[in-house]
Image (tube, rainbow, N blue to C red; front, side, top):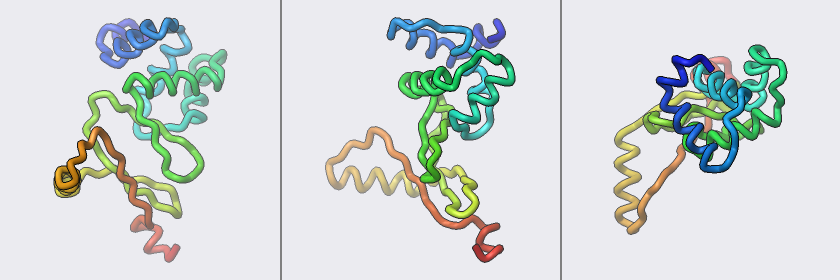
Length: 152
């Protein structure tokens, strides 16, 4: 990882502190995986991240990518997403605003959205039942506009 990224990256600090607490080392491969993950826009699977990391450093193994993603999820840097297509996706989590997803069951495209009315309704329902929400995920499945037009 470039020195400027190390110096400026809050994610780097969170990850290195987490690894130290777990008595694990911040290896060059883990640094690279973090850098590639943070540079990626949108959601990424372990397989996609592995391919991108291998382009930069050929001695990165898939198991290292997979374990590093698990560590990044556990320390709050990544969020694991299951869109029901058999592949787990990951997205950056630290300092990101909450959002939900609509997933097209035909083409697999996803749309991120935030609706304050839905968020408020969830709060009202939880208060009514004396329930304290600590986190949630909402994923809506259906057909995107393009697939609807194509009659899929």
